[in-house]
Amino acid sequence: MELDHRFDSKDLVKARRIFIEMRERITKDVAASNLVANEKYRTEKIAEAWTIELYRLMADRNDDEDKYGELMSLAGFFETIGVMVKNKYVSEQDAIGLFKGPLITFGRGFTKHIELRQKEAGMPSGLLEHALYPYELAESAERKSSSPTA
Image 1 (cartoon, rainbow, N blue to C red):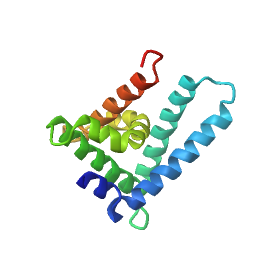
Image 2 (cartoon, rainbow, N blue to C red):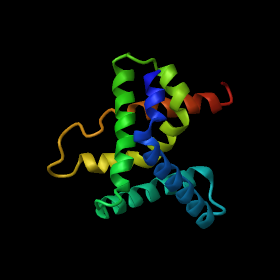
Image 3 (cartoon, rainbow, N blue to C red):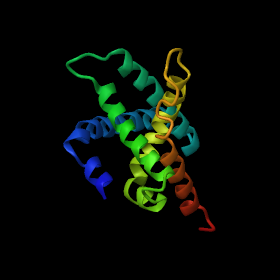
Image 4 (tube, rainbow, N blue to C red):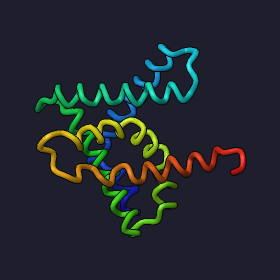
């Protein structure tokens, strides 16, 4: 599948590295400051931390190192997957089979940020409107696979 090659391409290597480093740091920080919290609470705190961090990176953009731009290239990749799955060019099962983990991590971290960006004045309609679709499918598949009746 060409999507698999694109995900592993040089174009997304830096974005994926930044994404993984942020995921690990945010998860570690939230876990350390919420030792007795349940998983649902930690997941909510992780989402909040992603939103704060993404806005910070957006504000700190510069020509030398644009981590926000790199992360948005990853969002663009997931946007492509969303369009391809919605239009049935790629099956849901194939997309989730290949990218379930990254889709879930991306969606949990980026959903609020994307929703807020879509509401900003002057923002063109349709900003990353398909990027969260495969996340929703992956999250649903994850819930089904972890339910006691699955």
